[in-house]
Length: 619
View (cartoon, rainbow, N blue to C red):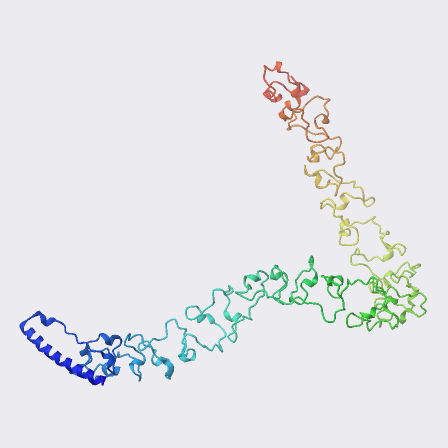
């Protein structure tokens, strides 16, 4: 009914429009300006089957209703917008994507472009449309590839890609350069290494392949909890640098933690709450602090356990589970441990009483048990042990009787069976007895230096057992015999001081290498040779020329008259005038003899030109 009413109204309006057209024609013939008047037709399309939306609302009626045809006007986009309907319509461009759906599937009357393409039902390849002229093509910054788009992209979410990196092992930066695709993030560890040196395409994070070789410091510059994994929550509380305890070869356990100087109890860290190892399950039952038994330097064995007061029942702990027990090579015995051992010094067993033992030593000391046997280098002998050794003091074998042995020492003392010539022995092919005696082997008193033509340093060089130059010897490259004599080595009798550079006496004469300044010596820092000479050391004669002391004073003047306290420091009677003459003679100044001039004006008596101190004369 509404459509019929609308149609009748439209016909009525059509009739009125015809009348208006006739009037307009008359006015045009008359040349009236009224012909230019606009006549608007107001029709409500909302009640029709084609409500006007978007750009259709402002289109002129005749752009769609051609030939005065109102009913039956096509409603499909492609009928009007075909380019052949004769209407003044926007048509599909020649490079439009080939498509078999209605225009309004992608376009709207409000805004034709851009189109909203629903790719959900698209089965063709992307590049059949997205080639640049029909639809947006692959951007210039796209990573180089000939693969189909669908291998990485999806129509539901184009940006979130699923690229399969299998088989790609290097050259990541050729694509991941932050231009073509996402590259190294800003918080990445600073590095110029290739990605594959640390990362794997199968599992990119964490980077398990980083080579820390050569990195010894500054771990936290990367391992700060953001750039790379940082300190764990169970880490022992510490402000130390990582490398103080860890190394890159074997990070855990931390091999370098220095327990020296730690004052906190062990249980502060070793309590099971932190990564530090705690007390083991098989530990001896004890509530003692760890350091009562263990040492920070050598934790196992617990050699600081205080066994004081424990006199028996060793096996209650030393049962092989909680603590070590009797070894397999222990001498067969049913005795309790404390019969032979004590807690002060367990090994060797000091409590074993050899007195009264009637069995031969070899019964136990045969090498099969823990009791020490004859060593491999023992002198060849079938004698019973006790012929040379004693039970009270086994080593050295003091009961061996060398009496009557005056030669052929090396038959036993060859370094294998008995102690031989030491590596620092003076090179010699002489027999031992030429220098040594069995009664007093060291020092070798029999060496005769008379007739020796080699220099002393040939033997006395410090490389051999012969005494060499002591550490506090004056520095010199002279041969020993220039100062020493073979007959009487000390004191020196031949040192020639001529040629010794001035001012260098204390290089040797410093109290360590050679005699130094004696007690009671005049206190001075001057070099010895300012007063002494090697040719005549005493008496000393100091030359005052060039000092504040003006030279020849009275003959009766002694050093201590000016140098009080036996010191180089002068005791001035009038310090205000030092070092002028008035420093000592201000009290001798006679103002009446000096034209009323003051002491300060005449303090330099000798430099004034009035007095002379030469030849011990004042005038």
